[in-house]
Amino acid sequence: MAKKQSTKSPKQTDEVLRSAVDDNESSDEAYSLTPIDRKRAITLIGSAIGLGVMSTVISRIIPNPAVPKGPITTHKIPPVQDGAGEVDILVRMQNELRRALFKPMEERRWLMVIDTRKCVGCHACTVACIAENKLPPGVVYRPVITEHIGQYPHQITRFFPRPCMQCNNPSCVSVCPVRATWKRPDGVVIIDYDRCIGCRYCLTACPYGARTSDFGNYYTEHTPEIQPYEKQPSNEYNKSWSREGHGSPVGNARKCHFCLHRIEQGLLPQCVSTCIGRANYFGDANDARSLVAEMAKSSNQMKLLEEKGTKPEVIYLV
Image (cartoon, rainbow, N blue to C red):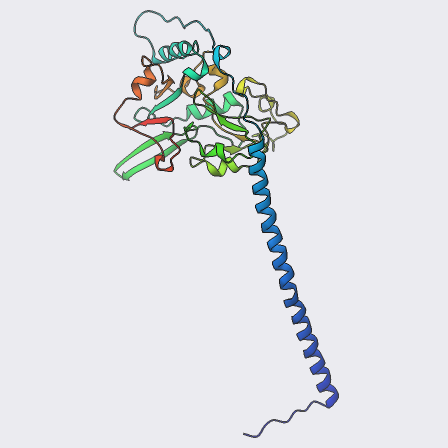
């Protein structure tokens, strides 16, 4: 086949060649940016590692919070008087709780046992918890998880209330860079809202999803007026936390704490008090005479995700 002759003039050919050279130079420039991007990426990775190391160092420098112990942690509250006849288990557990408060904090260990056979999935505990702790949208301390087993018509439904597991080896504590969360001597894992910086490391570390962030939202924020009851302060950790001005706990991690502010007043956690099926047992596991210690000996028990090594303190009866 005869080679096709070019119809371009020498001047046009020069322009094409120059254009090609310019393109190549542009391409070279583009490739020449690659080392800069690589350097930038290395810098960013180094910065991330540096921040991680720095946060670890800071976490080691910041001292552990002073946890009160001894006689100052005792509470002398008289028992509840009940009428003649069979005593409701709520009254029994409340009196056992008050008996435990006579002891220093380090001598009692709060434990929750949930009998899933008695839970009817009414969600009363979830709603009561939200009302008690003034929880905003997206923050739920005690959801109730529904589990369907089998297929219709041979199907059963089981409900799992899921509070914080108050683990003995809590993965959420060790990741906190500012030591804003720790396990108390009585077994409850708490958060210091004044220390929490809202980094959410603890949210990702918890295998139960028991921690959530407070983004400062309101249920009625898209209505003509945010209702006053949503602006009421919560009383967690025996302190009044106002949401005005987006102060703590807005922006912090939040979690179930067994209603410590109620316990130290001689009252059961709100979820236990409101359970219509009496499916919750709560009290001092170190008190061998307590109902919760008795239920904790049941053979038909299980704990969630024990393989994670967190050693959860909430027991389920199945």
